[in-house]
Length: 311
Image (cartoon, rainbow, N blue to C red; front, side):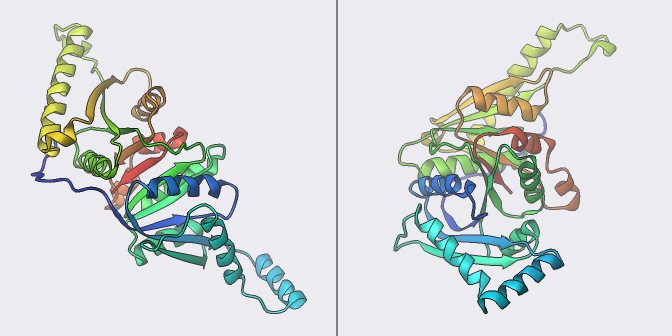
């Protein structure tokens, strides 16, 4: 098929993270996020954890009450107190290891903008945020964040289970899905117990009624599926050259009928007990940021498993 993005791949190395920046709210939802990170860090090398909390000060009333508090209890360092709370919460769940650096940051400002700025300033190669699946504004926050952040990101819903046996990679044969596939293979190479990687392609049967094409819908379905299957084989052989890596990969075709592609991906993930979705998205030019992808946004909107976004 046309439009397949390829590049010469010689070797995929095991995945490692040099600096993971983790946004914490200092609330109940942090516990699930930290538990999942503890699970993940035992399987994927993470050299440095940087935990950050953003103090949102956006009105005069906040400043007034802070000043009142100072008069009552004397000078205090709010940031220092928050750092201590942050440290206690983290270390109660994630044990400190000698070979891993841990940093704590408390900053003031708009949470979204400050997190994006700090991730760039501190050269994070992965930013991790939690997601409350019951609150709509958390879905909006995740979508806005992923539109603007320039590094890889991991969104961890509060329904996440500490498991990594089934990885799902949506493939549309673009350079972005290629990055997602490489990341999935690299992560799998880091796992002692290998996961199954399922690559799915969501396809649609075009309506050719107006063109008097003498093909039935079933004929078209067979033609498209044959084309996509061959494309998947070619794509995997080109992009995953090591047959030892390919043995953990299976391919599936999903027909897009009454629902959009994002919905189809989520339904597949749900039915097949997916533990992580890895997706490549656009995100460099302003136009690409606006078009981050209705597919990615849809997946994040109702998703109940961790979603790894590759930039």
